[in-house]
Picture 1 (tube, helix red, strand yellow):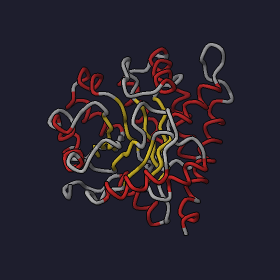
Picture 2 (cartoon, rainbow, N blue to C red):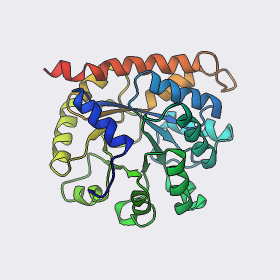
Picture 3 (cartoon, rainbow, N blue to C red):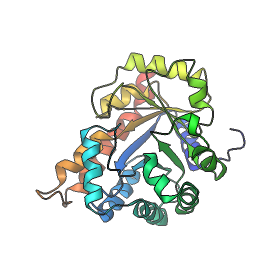
Length: 282
């Protein structure tokens, strides 16, 4: 882990910690509902207070995703989104933003088809900072994790309520950037996390690692973001943002003049909750 140079991700979490607050980590699906809107949304996320942006790589069989994120992936695929276009989206985002960390999140299949080594090189060149690949266990680190780390990309792992103390060291072995704690067992966007249980889980994970712990699944509004942010180093919001995008589309599933402003408004509200998180705890 010490060999890992500083990345945009580690810098951003350090800045948030220095400011005495958690980071707001936002998730959207790359290419939802089309490439240009997706780029405008990503820029709006950063401008409205998102500290880290996770971009979903659309995949036809997303088994860990709830209905909202599945639908976003379907819209993106229908709009012609590919892995190459997702990397292009990052490249274009970097033309105007050199500091906001970008994490690509998704499944291994499209990367495997693209070629792992080629993907790592292209992702790094495009300006990607980290990867979350939900279906690659630590036992398969040679496939993507180790090449990614050696290229200077953070490899971020998911820990869940069922990841016990025996399993945690294995999960954390090659993790860098931050640990993503999935606060609810099940698919994304399903229920609301319990703040007390989240606090206990964060404390438990921190016994095993010095990395920041970001908590996701079920954060929908500023109040929940504030509550979770009291104990977590980061608050992850995905389904709520995607629901706002979906609600702004026209009958044919195309973007409207409301799409980007709707995302910006929600994220500004979430950011206000996250910024107040530690004040509430004082």
